[in-house]
Image (cartoon, rainbow, N blue to C red; front, side, top):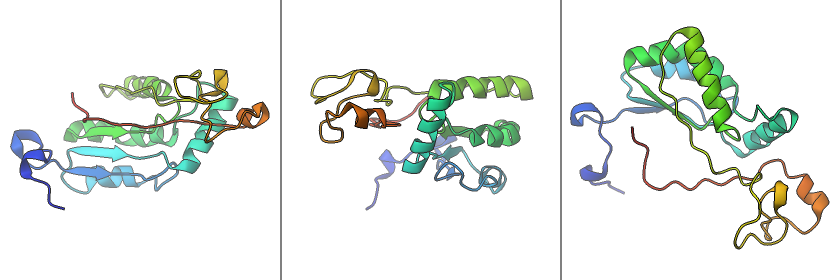
Length: 177
């Protein structure tokens, strides 16, 4: 499939937008973050941490401590690479916030202050269905254990209590400043 040039992203001054990715799941190669930052010209570096197994791990982490639920290795990668990303003007975009995007955003702000590298930090919320009550068309169940998706969960409250994470992602449009 060919994408018309008018719909392609462009970088500064209409130049091509150079995007790299440093991960495909929580626990992927730690060095990939630094390698992408030093491997050549780059405008945006992404990190995808949310494979299905990762969501289970993050859900269990959050059950132990509600302040957790994000990919903690992303903080170690940032600690080593934030200054270089800023120096090179690379924008960082990640879903490492997992089940606690606000928690990771706060941790990144703290890290930024601690290492002395200013950073604009934003996060997106709304995809954690486990903490939502029942909504229209949600089927049976719900309450504090998420949406009662009838095709996924039964009316068996014991089964609902074993659900560790329930989220959805729907993206419309794109990210902008």
